[in-house]
Image (cartoon, rainbow, N blue to C red; front, side):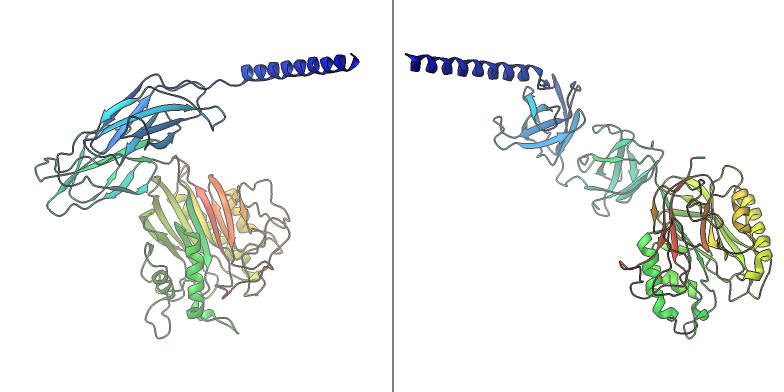
Length: 507
């Protein structure tokens, strides 16, 4: 009898436990996020090889899954996803029946809710034996898009349309070549580009291509650099010759892909037995798309060494020139300058490149030369015009007697992104660069195999990049070193290249 009571007690306990578990499960189920509803209505617009599906946004959906198939059972369905309440299906077969359905993503981002009603559509038949062109976007700026497409032969011309909707064919542009640039666009905006082949009279000879989606950027940075490459005739001791250093200099520059670079000691004197100047030899080594703003001798002196090199794909030269600086030694010093347009944003800026007089006893000369640099830049870049001055200023923060050219630049409105002020161990509060790359390395290496560096933020600078008020997202002292800080391979120059990524402000 006692045994039966104990058994009955266990059964009651198990029943209570099961009831509790069922209750907990029901409570959890009731509190879980419900499956998002499917889109109520899906619409379609199609061409021979593409279709655009659209629907009203669904509350609580993180995105959408789309199945499409040539069979109503979706046995061979292709699944694509979209974060927006629309999708462009490309690569479809002309004159073919398709079935499509749409479901919303679960709020957890993994599961999907119920499917919408099945949508049936038929792509239109192609009227033309020649396939539609295939479009490739080659360049995006904040206000333009450039593209190329299939060359259909010399007997065909083209019409191209760029629209904010995938089915739009707004104001087609007539083009003779399989390439075009579409301007006066809005930044940070999605566009759809379609192209078709036409006859000389404008009669269509192909279908419109499937729309190519392209988004104009909100902004595009500018990469600027400064590099004292050491003149070919300045070799002393066991330093490598220019012929041996040149590949390392070229590789260093190309590794940073600068839009504009100011060179110092890129001499216009002819290389022995070569019939070409050092700066021309370097530009030839860089190759396309790089060019030099002034490709002729300046001032009649072989030692003139400042050159501005630019990427022709991203920079347009508006005006360029040189300004002589007050003389302080045997070599005449100059400010090379250029008024430039950044093609990717359309913004105008002024770039200056200089090399001040070296020597501890030449402080007063450097002050006079800096004054000329500033007065020239003020004329070229009136207030509100972005300006950048780079170069070898032949001053450093440990120099006795102050940091006068630095102070003059800052007082005139030019900023040092690194905040590498006089006798500073840490970056000054005025520093505003967002990301530092090896800024603790000194910019002058004196061909020491172990590159000079410090334990604090900024190394010793002779080479500077001064900017007017603008965002500077990164600044790098460019050195190719191993884990111990020793140079790898040929040391390019006795100076290290410096590079900054800046964002020109809108005027």
